[in-house]
Image (tube, rainbow, N blue to C red):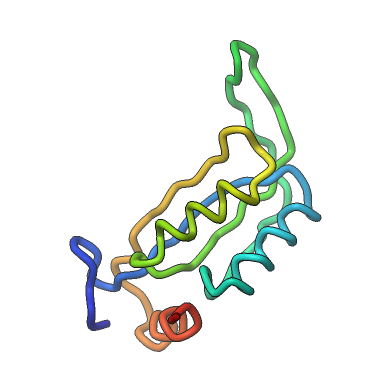
Amino acid sequence: MTDPVAGNPTGTLLVLTTLPDTDSALSLASSLVTRRLAACVNILPAGTSVYEWQGEIQRDAEHVLLIKAPEAGYAALEAALRELHPYELPEIIAVPITEGLSEYLQWIKDLTAS
């Protein structure tokens, strides 16, 4: 890929978040793609998350979303996730995609271009 962002040769991210149910996951994913903030969002089947929140151990079923997006658009993507996410403190983790099929990475870039 050309046009690399500092430290990420492809300029593409895999952003992870979790949602409590299928309906909220589908709604959020659709909104991100419609807004052209993400080219694709995979919704994985519900798994169990175990974590501490406000001094209590929680065990909740959650869907993991794998969001493919351009690094240059991360700020707008994070703002949308904060706006649309049902959690008070959503998990939002971005991992640089340092390698990948060049045609696929170009597809992500093409679909999210303003």
